[in-house]
Amino acid sequence: MDLQAFKQRILPVQGRLFRLAQLFLRNREEAEDALQDVLLRLWTNRQQLDAYHSVEALAVQMTKNLCLDKLKAHNKRKMSDDAELLGVQSDGVSPYQQVEFADSADLIRNLIDTMPDQQKLILHLRDVEEYSFEEIEQITGLSVNNIRVILSRARQRLRDNYVKANDYEAGH
Image (cartoon, rainbow, N blue to C red; front, top):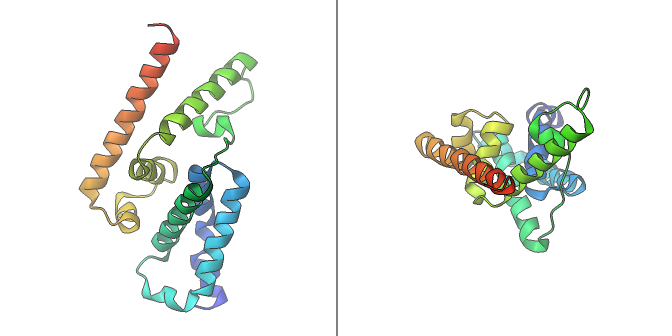
């Protein structure tokens, strides 16, 4: 794979890889470092990339594995932009609502952090990155039916735990 082919096939997925790294690492700088590491590894092995059916799936898998290795190595996480998680615009929102959104974002992030890695990954790939089930199948090696079940359970778990946490905080 030459430089032009690399740019056409790898560089367009940088944003997705970065967001995936940030999901796991919760730190912008570490996510950038992980992305650079993955891109360097892909570039170093560019001659073998043509053998892969989906270079994007390989890149996502490499990013996930690298992030999990980093987490195991130094168990440290930081939070990023709260409004981004909830998809909230800050214009026209009162300070009280901003605090509420930030609290909800923290709660959702913490609930997602407690999920098994497989549920966390599939939830992120489908709901944040908007991958198709077939693309997730290529990335994870799981069947589409299995992915649907895991995604459904992840969403249900997140919903139940969010409601439970809010009911508890409200004093019910």
